[in-house]
Image 1 (cartoon, rainbow over the protein chains, first blue to last red):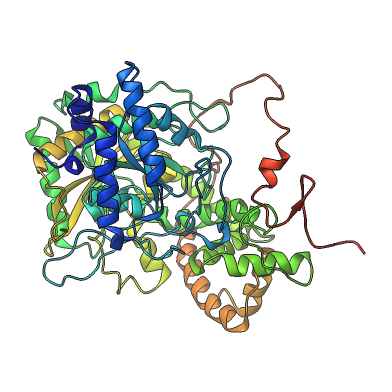
Image 2 (image 1 turned 120 degrees about the vertical axis):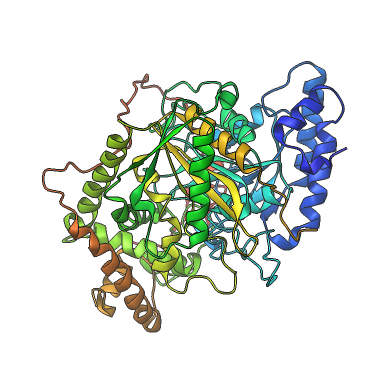
Length: 490
Length: 95
């Protein structure tokens, strides 16, 4: 029999329903894996006792004939979701000691559907990063190694702990959040499936805010079907989040196997960026061939403002962050560093509590919103954002979905990250445009680079068209036949 | 450089983040590089373009204006570094 930790959600669901395994069996197997792989630093807070309690309660519900969509499924939660009575850190020192007395809407929905929470996963501080190197709790590590050099690789970010936990089979699935690529990029780096739903699909209530017009929760899983199952449990209208959309979600699992016959898939020419490694382009070409073989028509499209997406993002996201993070002042929660007066208390608390990348973004955000610069930067970026969204709207008149690489490279070594902030930001060059436009996107593991590290292909679809998004993703998954077991992990 | 040390000091003050002299110097370099890169946006023609202030065409929904929560001061102050009698405690600001 397959190891319990190798099971997918869909597979575990069948075994649970047939009574061949219990939620307690699954929880114990995953907790053991969590302990075995503690060197990956994927979790900030482990909650084994709670997991076993939740698993027992789940088994009781099942016996009573009352099983939810995620009944008995062991999951990890990104430590950006507030979880009642469990510390929530956002991987920042400034939230030291913070324990929410409420549950985020998304995790509450998952728990209602029977999910068994194993713990809270590591991330870049306040979800700002593409490497997991900015966590106050130390970096999470990618379970994949390049057989050649054996160097430690980053899992990507910001949902790097979630990606690492799912790839290393410590959790069957995990939640992530994606502002500019924070689900899709780590999924690509760890050979997992990462789905960012349409903006508004999942409630943001109880998720520590980074950039409110971009933040969106979604799942990391090892199969496309599992992504569909997870999204089904996470999504839904929340009257307490005014940006949550009241748009019904189709049964995504039903849609999954419908294929791409008759669909038209766009390949945006502007994503063929200068200096892109040949291995990325080769994978992209293979993806095109897979979709054509499956009956889709593939055609080039133009998204002319693509190269302006990243600079626009690095105005809008920091601007929103500088406003959202104003609440960390040493008064209501977390760290307080005393000063001579109130202002010096604020200044010292924030100087000690925030890491270097978070400070950079707050300062950029403060600058672009400050008097005399607002029109030149913030308003300009909002107008460019309109242009980018219009590019996609134009594309949807001729194609049903877009196919692109997820990242411009595979996971980089933890000891040699891009050496300046702008080079690090380029990691998100293919994921940010869809974020700005609020579109659903998914990264599907599709191959390995020359070093034996995973690479992902990204599919982007129309707003609220997750059904078609997953059909394309499922087709790629089937054609790629990617083995999600990290090489070199014992 | 777009960002000199004085600009960093001014913005850091607005953002309520204490900075030392060496840190301001380093930030000036890093933030200048970011701002210069961002300045490429000047190439985009945005005449007659409306700023995108929200995502999608969502219509805000109505709900009854009712009190549905409250009376939980102890919960709210439970995470505070200092609190007393259901209030947050801060340094004295009026002598």
